[in-house]
Length: 435
Ligand code: DAH
Image: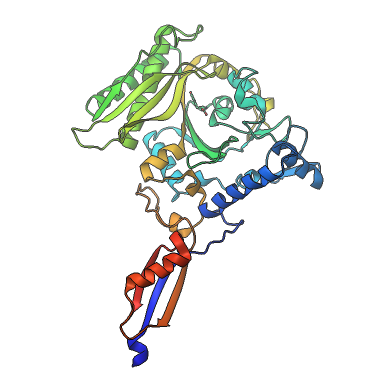
């Protein structure tokens, strides 16, 4: 039939060109970010925090956060979009890249306690003071952290739970949680991300020190046979000293245990390369208020050194504080008196899950972790590290177009030029479905 001969069907797969403020997909977040910026430029009179405070005040003197009501005051700078993130706890979804990574690390430290549902609201004392943060530390400022009011804030790091976890009597533990920091908008920064804190303490008596030594021997033997090259630095040095209350020998042994434990974790996460391409790890001197000596560790990945975690020998102040300040932990499950653990020495590390997951799963943009798009979520399954397959960041929008063509037919390229003129780069592909 004529209709069949001269009738061509094209399918144009492209973008809807709109965004939906209620959805969490990457497209909507990028669009929101862009339009917010424009809005701010046009309406300058109030600083951002002022406008947020007024928003809260206009409705009531209280805000509701995870079913608890808090009074707002001059310190309040938490926003509704951040409050909406609090119940999501991506690290607790077993088939989400963050949940998969969390399980992988937990399975490596198989005899460590696993904590992952700790309330995100903390006191500034818990987040900073009990860990020895100086009063003028920039992390305390309202431009860097989310305050609910002068007494409560969202934790900025999982270290905020060190004192209470030690106080609860845990000696080897991993704690995974969502953490909140006010940040710039780009593909590797997001105001909510996920950290895992790992810690281990040993008694300073003879049996405790024997336990460190035995563990160091076991781990050294394992690493000696493994495909890893480690650039090390001294466990303690004049610029990265043992703490004055520590026996320097104990401090060295514990710092070594930290390094060996971390190196074996990195091998589990990033190892497995060819014999002639060993995993390369390097240790760097660092400073954290709550550890001494302190370190950062990096791995060489695709020709670049990537910082993976911060760690160190836990400041004795943290262990001494464990138990002394339970009044500061209104959300701890079972407040109970504890003597603290002054006769212990230990190490801790803190790592960012997104940063590692982006490398392992090949996820190019941190905002994708928040996607509820099945094209993202269906790519991953429990206990498997798979490479992310990119898809359009906009929702797909199919158009079937059919039309009459002149007797000589229309070349596909003519039609493609037509589409390009109208849709520009928004059209992803054009296919002839029937001729
Ligand atoms: N809390 C630190 C941060 O968020 C990371 C960190 C560094 C954790 C050293 C630790 C540590 O436990 O020992 O940047």
